[in-house]
Length: 187
Figure (cartoon, rainbow, N blue to C red):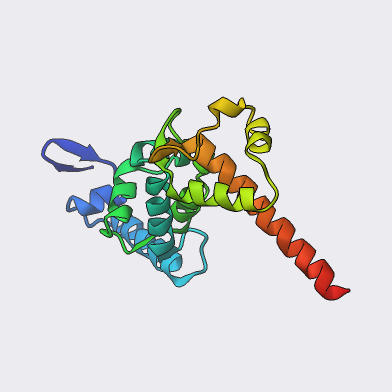
């Protein structure tokens, strides 16, 4: 067993090699480690390294939605320090599994209850919905609010859950319009 600072490291482990042991078993463990890293970076392994820009952009989007790193960490299971390093452009490449975890964060699942976000986009989407045959009363009913409680158009901030619901309805409306335009173009 190799020792350093009174700690014992078993032979045949990379930790023992890193602490000075050069026996055959420790050298083999170190070589195996580097072989696995080469395989990972060559693209033949699901644990390959990928560009971190997509994850960084998604973390920025989540931040704009009111979801901070602690909430993203909780929702994804990724290390909070890694999330910080990705968001701060300290990491340019990350494991594919880390990218999948980050991109798999659902804003509705990660939002702190009652969080507020900037309401500009939400107000624009509500305006588009109202211009496309929706009514304020209909939107209030859809979101199970009384007419006097549907106040999305007021103030600078809106509840994140309301923003997500309106965004979802807005996307459905756009998809429906595309479907109808495609239907009429085909006829």
